[in-house]
Image (cartoon, rainbow, N blue to C red; front, side, top):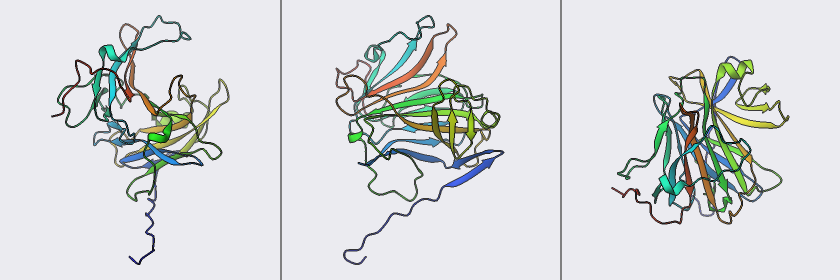
Length: 281
């Protein structure tokens, strides 16, 4: 390289798949990012397993000590009543970032190589079913997330840009959708498809609001009838959040008793070590 010259990273050319009226990005994994006038940062990485399982990892935040826990909400709780969760009572504190897995069978859990204790897990919906919410990640005060200094040519970056301002908090949603439901406009919760993919804009009928989703599928997927829909939107800053933080909910399902349950984590966690905290192998 000549002195003073600059090598630019090659941009990956997205592969676009098509099924009927639905178009989608085709990749085994992707990095979900957010851009603003001040910076561009990475929020999480999503990947697919050979059997169609969905994996979400969170290596881009500086703080690595967190709290993982199962959560449950009783079926008779008033819908609009605020609720406070105690993650510490049933949780596991860890000193590393973890991976969330939603297996094709419907089993969901947290994991990390080097942790010798079983981390929280539960049963959610199988991925060959109609679909549902895979995860929701809320990221607060983005200054502690890894910036995109140079885009690696091998990675697919799915970036939501805020052109006029820099949000203090964003929410990443991952929905597992049937292509046929997108085509026929029968997707519960996000009806009114205006056009479909690979960036699909949906209009809610209840309030007319719009959300844009990246539609993503793996190449040669055994679950060809589905796509993972990823949205990044601005949300209010949580009360008392004066430092960078992540809150995650995944594997939502309803139990036989009617209670709604999921897995959750909170980063960073600065409380006492959990009695169940696993040691590094």
